[in-house]
Length: 315
Image (cartoon, rainbow, N blue to C red; front, top):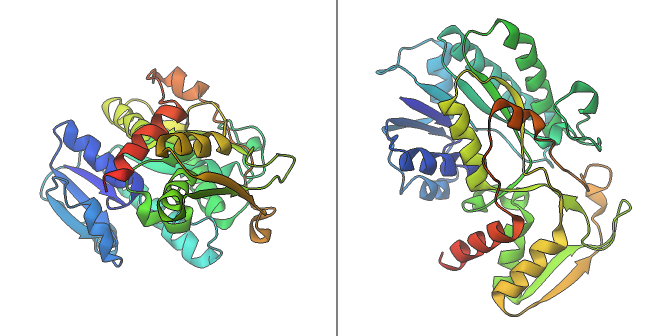
């Protein structure tokens, strides 16, 4: 049996799809369906059971036995809003919940593959899995940073796999549940659909109009990395999950305009509320991931955006 937390979310639902495609169906999907529309991300998946995330936590805390042995836990559930400043909520949801689940997995020697984030680097201009480059700019980034530090402390004595994946800018199907935190590709596709105008930020932080750069990784690649660690349970540690190449936001906008066949690009003032809490440049150092043995090629931004757009227009 496999457990996925955040199974109805963006990466979780794509991971569920990837597991199904690899003939894994004995899966418990864990999530919070207060927003009932998220059920759509589960509706086509093959699962054994669904559990509310609070009920699941109670089972873990009481050390209840599941009907079948747990083969692995993919912990994707979290509050991922970088604009959320309720630190008490963020730490309970992202940090304490993760610690509880981690220690359950360690006690029962269950592989634990979890979602970290490139937000731990925040104000840094080097994106390497080392403490001196980790400088979160918001409480979301801090919650992920602090859990990574906890993992580093327990790793030396762990008798089972712990693999943390620092996702960079993941984009692709099923982002609708993320709202304002969805990728720029998602927002631009919706803008094209609504009024034929795509909008990017004007120059800020030393970058020209739309020239801010991020390491954009297609969600299918993020799933492949998760599945690789699942198939290689001897590999533990914290690893960047990105392409290793920073690309301009302009590339996404121009690719979509070309695919759409019409529309225009406009630049809007950089929002005041994001100043000082925004990463204008990210680029994963994936040398540690490669050294661990992951050698798959990452999808190019142009190819990924085209695949995403083709999916989007059919919805």
